[in-house]
Image (cartoon, rainbow, N blue to C red; front, side, top):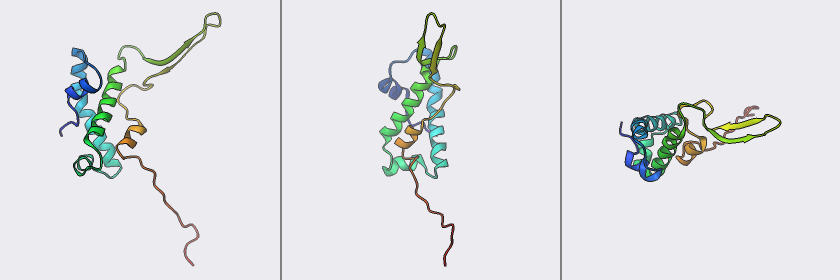
Length: 131
Protein backbone atom coordinates (compact mmCIF):
# COMPACT_ATOMS: atom_id res chain seq x y z
CA UNK A 1 0.00 0.00 0.00
CA UNK A 2 1.02 3.59 -0.53
CA UNK A 3 2.48 5.43 2.50
CA UNK A 4 0.63 8.45 3.83
CA UNK A 5 3.81 10.59 3.82
CA UNK A 6 6.99 11.05 1.82
CA UNK A 7 10.56 11.81 2.84
CA UNK A 8 9.91 15.41 1.73
CA UNK A 9 7.01 15.62 4.22
CA UNK A 10 9.27 14.37 7.02
CA UNK A 11 11.96 16.88 6.07
CA UNK A 12 9.53 19.79 5.86
CA UNK A 13 7.57 19.00 9.03
CA UNK A 14 10.47 17.71 11.18
CA UNK A 15 13.99 18.65 10.05
CA UNK A 16 16.68 17.85 7.49
CA UNK A 17 17.78 14.24 7.84
CA UNK A 18 21.21 12.68 7.70
CA UNK A 19 21.92 9.92 5.18
CA UNK A 20 21.40 7.19 7.79
CA UNK A 21 18.20 8.82 9.07
CA UNK A 22 16.90 9.08 5.50
CA UNK A 23 17.43 5.34 4.99
CA UNK A 24 15.63 4.51 8.22
CA UNK A 25 12.82 7.02 7.57
CA UNK A 26 12.29 5.66 4.06
CA UNK A 27 11.61 2.22 5.53
CA UNK A 28 9.46 3.69 8.32
CA UNK A 29 7.14 5.46 5.85
CA UNK A 30 5.40 2.22 4.93
CA UNK A 31 5.67 0.65 8.38
CA UNK A 32 4.05 3.60 10.16
CA UNK A 33 1.32 3.92 7.52
CA UNK A 34 0.48 0.22 7.80
CA UNK A 35 0.48 0.40 11.61
CA UNK A 36 -2.03 3.25 11.48
CA UNK A 37 -4.16 1.31 9.00
CA UNK A 38 -4.12 -1.65 11.40
CA UNK A 39 -5.12 0.55 14.35
CA UNK A 40 -8.01 1.89 12.26
CA UNK A 41 -8.99 -1.65 11.32
CA UNK A 42 -9.06 -2.63 15.01
CA UNK A 43 -11.40 0.31 15.60
CA UNK A 44 -13.64 -0.93 12.78
CA UNK A 45 -12.66 1.85 10.38
CA UNK A 46 -10.79 2.19 7.09
CA UNK A 47 -8.29 5.05 7.32
CA UNK A 48 -7.91 5.37 3.54
CA UNK A 49 -11.69 5.76 3.15
CA UNK A 50 -11.80 8.21 6.05
CA UNK A 51 -9.29 10.41 4.21
CA UNK A 52 -11.23 10.18 0.93
CA UNK A 53 -14.54 10.99 2.65
CA UNK A 54 -13.05 13.91 4.55
CA UNK A 55 -13.67 12.29 7.95
CA UNK A 56 -9.95 12.64 8.67
CA UNK A 57 -8.01 15.29 6.84
CA UNK A 58 -4.97 14.12 4.93
CA UNK A 59 -2.78 16.72 6.67
CA UNK A 60 -3.73 15.37 10.10
CA UNK A 61 -2.64 11.88 9.02
CA UNK A 62 0.61 13.33 7.66
CA UNK A 63 1.23 15.14 10.93
CA UNK A 64 0.67 11.99 12.99
CA UNK A 65 2.91 9.92 10.70
CA UNK A 66 5.71 12.48 10.87
CA UNK A 67 5.41 12.66 14.69
CA UNK A 68 5.78 8.88 14.96
CA UNK A 69 8.70 8.76 12.51
CA UNK A 70 10.44 11.69 14.23
CA UNK A 71 10.05 10.05 17.65
CA UNK A 72 11.53 6.84 16.25
CA UNK A 73 14.46 8.72 14.66
CA UNK A 74 15.22 10.53 17.93
CA UNK A 75 15.43 7.22 19.76
CA UNK A 76 19.06 6.29 20.14
CA UNK A 77 20.02 2.81 18.99
CA UNK A 78 23.30 2.51 20.90
CA UNK A 79 22.21 3.89 24.28
CA UNK A 80 18.98 4.67 26.08
CA UNK A 81 17.92 8.29 25.53
CA UNK A 82 16.66 10.11 28.59
CA UNK A 83 13.89 12.61 28.36
CA UNK A 84 14.53 13.94 31.84
CA UNK A 85 17.47 13.39 34.17
CA UNK A 86 18.53 14.58 37.62
CA UNK A 87 21.77 14.02 39.52
CA UNK A 88 23.06 14.55 43.05
CA UNK A 89 26.67 14.86 44.15
CA UNK A 90 27.25 13.69 47.70
CA UNK A 91 24.28 11.37 47.94
CA UNK A 92 25.29 9.53 44.74
CA UNK A 93 21.81 9.68 43.27
CA UNK A 94 20.88 9.63 39.58
CA UNK A 95 17.35 9.32 38.21
CA UNK A 96 15.84 9.75 34.79
CA UNK A 97 12.87 9.12 32.54
CA UNK A 98 13.50 7.28 29.30
CA UNK A 99 12.05 8.56 26.01
CA UNK A 100 11.00 5.11 24.80
CA UNK A 101 11.20 2.63 27.68
CA UNK A 102 10.81 -0.49 25.57
CA UNK A 103 12.25 0.86 22.35
CA UNK A 104 10.70 0.28 18.98
CA UNK A 105 7.75 1.89 17.27
CA UNK A 106 4.76 3.01 19.29
CA UNK A 107 1.69 5.12 18.67
CA UNK A 108 0.36 7.35 21.43
CA UNK A 109 -3.31 7.34 22.42
CA UNK A 110 -3.44 11.08 21.72
CA UNK A 111 -2.29 10.43 18.14
CA UNK A 112 -5.04 7.85 17.64
CA UNK A 113 -7.52 10.36 19.07
CA UNK A 114 -6.37 12.98 16.55
CA UNK A 115 -7.26 10.50 13.82
CA UNK A 116 -10.68 9.83 15.33
CA UNK A 117 -9.81 6.26 16.28
CA UNK A 118 -10.19 6.61 20.07
CA UNK A 119 -13.55 8.07 20.88
CA UNK A 120 -15.37 7.37 24.09
CA UNK A 121 -18.39 5.18 23.73
CA UNK A 122 -21.39 5.10 25.96
CA UNK A 123 -23.05 1.79 26.61
CA UNK A 124 -25.67 0.50 28.99
CA UNK A 125 -26.14 -3.01 30.28
CA UNK A 126 -29.57 -3.78 31.66
CA UNK A 127 -28.78 -6.17 34.53
CA UNK A 128 -32.39 -6.51 35.69
CA UNK A 129 -34.03 -7.30 32.38
CA UNK A 130 -37.50 -6.21 31.30
CA UNK A 131 -40.65 -6.74 33.35
